[in-house]
Structures are given as structure tokens and as C-alpha cells.
Image 1 (tube, rainbow, N blue to C red):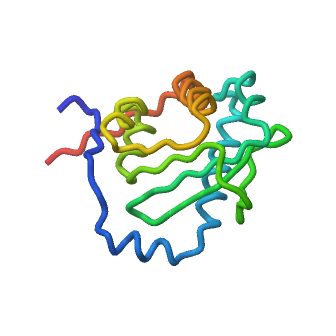
Image 2: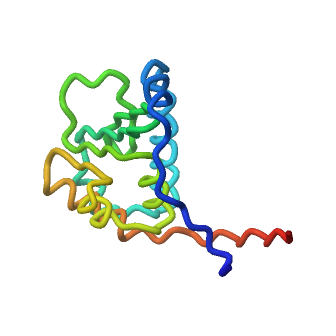
Length: 150
């Protein structure tokens, strides 16, 4: 084993999504916006492209958990949108495993999209801007976890 953890493709049971849809969705938006603003503050997101996001409405849906978060970028900050009054300019939908694989850079958005594991709807040009932004992010190195002996 090379010490690299691989996130398997999985789908949570349907009842989880039916329960998750009944729960308040605002915590998801707050958590996502906090993470995006932290990445922005750490200068991980390219400034020039951020200006292109100004006033755009985004939605991220996690199909198998029933979670959904809407947010916008305005005045230099990501902000949650708790009750969107229009369709998003760009929306993403996938199962939790696909998002985890993206974050871990185990899979890229193109592969997930063409394998029908990531749905992207809305403004195509905006989608390419966001994809290129994410591809350009240089994530800080995290310390390796110690190997557990068996």
C-alpha cells in the first residue's frame, strides 16, 4: 500500500436523501461559503477570475444526502443565499463520493461529467471559468497520516 487513500465510488441509500431533504439546508450554505472564503483569504483562488463571478448565483446539490447549498460572490466575498429568487447561473449536482473525489483530486470534473457522475447546468462559459479556477488551485500539502499497523 502506497499510503495514498483512495475514495471509492459509492452511493448512500435512498432513505438518507429523503431524510436530508427534510432537514434545514442553511447549514450547508454556511459551511460551503466558509470554506470558499477561507480559500479566498489564503489566496488559493485566482483573483482575476473571481471578478467574473460577481453577482452570479451558484447551487451545489449532493444527490445522495439530500443536501443543497446556494451562494453568490459579491463585493469580494462568497455569501450564502438562503432563499434563491431565481434559477442559478451555474448548478452542480453529484453524489457525495464524486465531490470527495474532486476535492482529493482523485478525479477531475471532465471525467466525472462525461461519466455522468457530475451534472453541470447553466451558463457554459461560467462553468469553464469555475472549472479552470478549481484546476488552478494549489492546495497546501497536508501532513501524511501515520500508517496503522495491523
